Length: 166
Image (tube, rainbow, N blue to C red; front, side):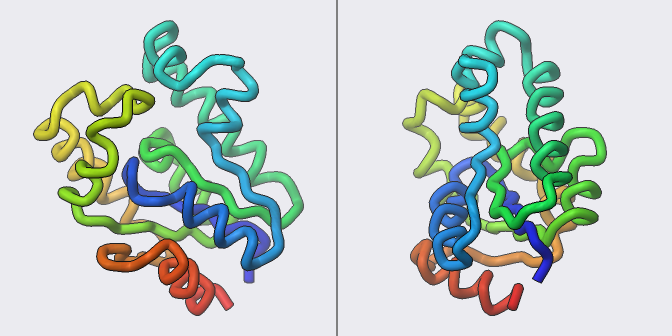
């Protein structure tokens, strides 16, 4: 197994939940990129978007991602939904880790994210968010492993990932 596993997928696909469980199962540290950005900037993600715009947020996200990818220790990393789509992030992820796309049906995603005020892009509305997912699919589908999460518990998703990476 490579020393890093990076979870990619749309917001609400379960990257953080699955990442925490996976890191426990593998006994290696877990890093949530969004939480790391909040810690470093001392600002919430919506605040960064509002104050500096999405482009600056993506730059900070990329710097943080690169730093963790280049660390030499074992890690499970959960990315933000847009991270794989910025510059050549997906290629970097694939080069330096085992990438896993948590593929989830849009209606299930919308059900999970639509009431979450910490997700700036939800304010765009359901159709625009659906189109955003469509635009991001080609990046997510470059992942080395694709796991369909529909109908699975987070624990079952972890079992599937473990069977693919071991």
